[in-house]
Length: 128
Length: 168
Image 1 (cartoon, each protein chain N blue to C red):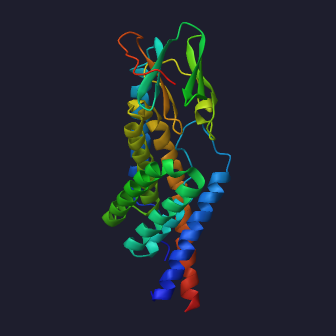
Image 2 (cartoon, one colour):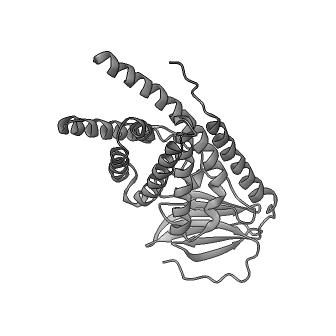
Image 3 (cartoon, rainbow over the protein chains, first blue to last red):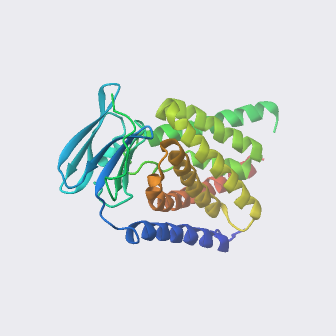
């Protein structure tokens, strides 16, 4: 009753997934590899700050007066150095500087995205 | 299956999936990318898909998500889990029905689609398409963990079948 475990379709599926992953990766990283000019920080979908990457600075995202995430701009990179959530995924995330790259904190709904220009971005509201 | 057998089967399956979720939540498994995980609990769902009526497999999957979501990851992540869970179940069902792939391919597909579902929800919740940057990493991790779960499921199903036939 020995039957072949893997069918042809299995190989196709496995290869197709790896291929599409590689394709998406290449598209995102090589056709759009421009270094960005600023980091846009959004909280709950609203832009709370736009920080220029060429000026070293530290920005605290606050939710109800409590610091939820600390964003540090240093040497042209944006990095999250502190988060009050449990998983610390955003803190462990590598620093970013390419247009479109982002660091996301799911529990706090905070997103840091690198944009190619700090102009033309309206700040929606002032963080309390 | 008799009614009492069915109750025992549901209880055992959900408990097993629950324990696997708990075990997984204890693993120091962090790649700096949200959403990458082993998906051990999916083992129970894949096995159920091949050994129980589809409806039962679906119920087990949904109750498992609800329980472990509420207890281990908080109500907020339930939205992600349900999106991933339902999408992956439907896709696994379709691929299983097609007959062109084995349990291995079904599991790989399930894990990958689960991650895609979570990314789509994240993009909607966050109102940001930047989350798609995680797509390649999540696809690769889905393929790898899906393969692992597929192989394990196959071993379990073979073992359970042998056990049942010895019992008779």
